[in-house]
Length: 275
Image 1: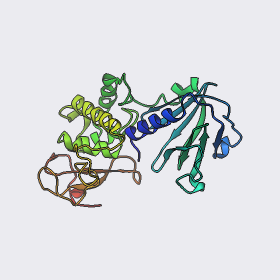
Image 2: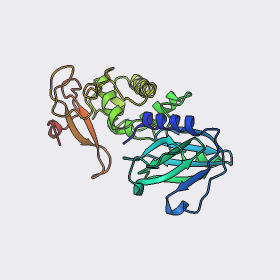
Image 3: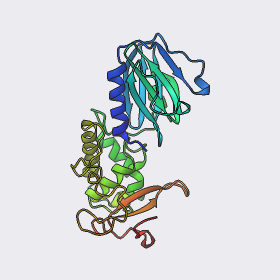
Image 4: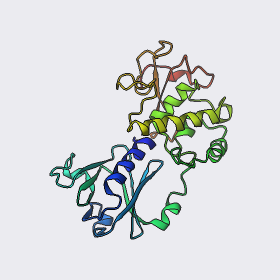
């Protein structure tokens, strides 16, 4: 699933391509919005909040999309012929005099009054990439359930917005924390949140590279994420992966090193190279 940095980079790209320009065509291929026409409106700005992308117009409307697992926004020259994906996957087409933005495989597409944005997204915790990130509020929300597993708590967008499986697993490895540790027993929760913020910010500066090791090669850019069965880059122990948290059938994957992140909370049955 795209994480906060991916959505931030996509919003930045869309803003550069569309902001200040009039929509000559605005096709929304969603049944509930099939008759909506935003053409003639000027895009005032495009922004992100956590994993949510918000395109605002001068008429007071916000096009709200979520990338889900496979969603993507592409910016193309206005004269482009193809979409870059099969036409049946396209959900939104926004055309200006110079650029075209195509949103594909978007599980959520809705139109809001811009004045209703806050109400619609009120459930989200502080955005890790916001300039005014509210660290104290994010810590308060995390600590509200001290018994909850830290890996599960970091993924909950109601606590802090922007972390997904990649940064969850990488942050826990880099802080040497057992993923099953209860929030109330995490050694340095403020430091963990600060690290997550720095990693997301660095990824945005690098255009969404998502490197946590400082290396750019796809094979070397992460410590544990999707490296199950491979030696840990620090100690040589095999990296593990397990399903964790959530309701049965909706668990999320966690990657970790059982030696670097040793702790008393890991269920013995989890310690295997793969699922």
